[in-house]
Length: 201
Figure 1: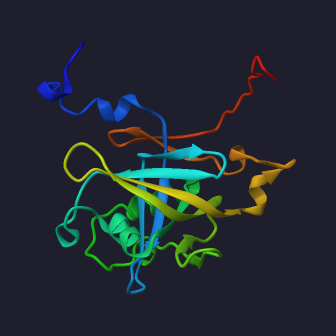
Figure 2: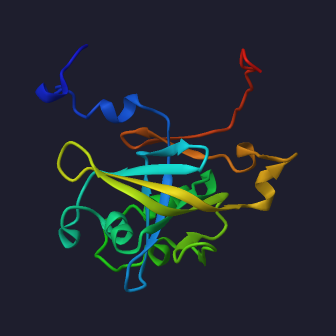
């Protein structure tokens, strides 16, 4: 099968959402200028650079009470900071609950039953007990092609790692089994890891 996205695919569901998979999930926590917390998962997310460490996520939809975007991007525009929380298998139901479209100002931490903790380098909440959390200062918000597609880039200013996820001096994903997005309503859990020696090692 071949199709041009501009012409449509003719399938019941958009295959593009499942082709680029698995995708890590950035569980983005923010706080608005009035001090109200927000928490939402984004699977258009990844790390982008090592030095300085940088990450990105993209928001692709809107809410009637936020104009051209959703709560996360609106809050980051106001405050210039956000936190990326790693999602483990054990947190899948809370992550899913936090994806609900709720009115502006509703605290998804409370809605999803997630405990919030304060960040160290920025004025922002983080997910207490997450395997890792990345405190970020906004560097750019880029308008992408299409309606209401916003890419948010940030520099990591602080990193939290749960003690039980550190094994033999390494951050061990098998200690918590990360959740990944596959597309549609499908997710996966990382349970198997193998190592490859690079040609230049």
